Length: 88
Image (cartoon, rainbow, N blue to C red; front, side, top):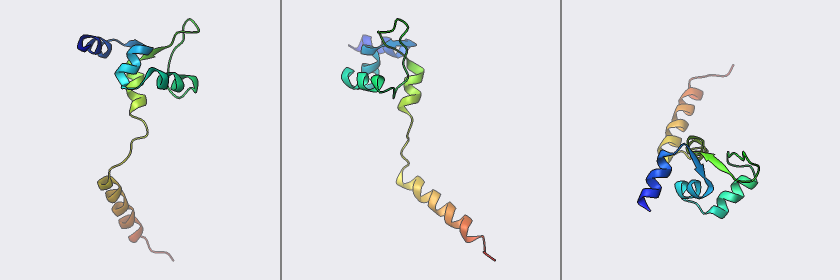
């Protein structure tokens, strides 16, 4: 099992089994993501799906959720910016 995980992290192109294992999701959920075109994939033969590992990593890192500290910093910066402007 460990060998399979090491191999899938070294390969550039992954099969559905490898992609699901790499991402830590079930194959059925991966199928749902591909069938609804929510995840980038390739079908060179029209049926079998393949995945680019770098694209999967980028996709996994989308829709980042900010921490409470980051949101607080953004709010403070916004308030300081707005506080410095005076309306006429």
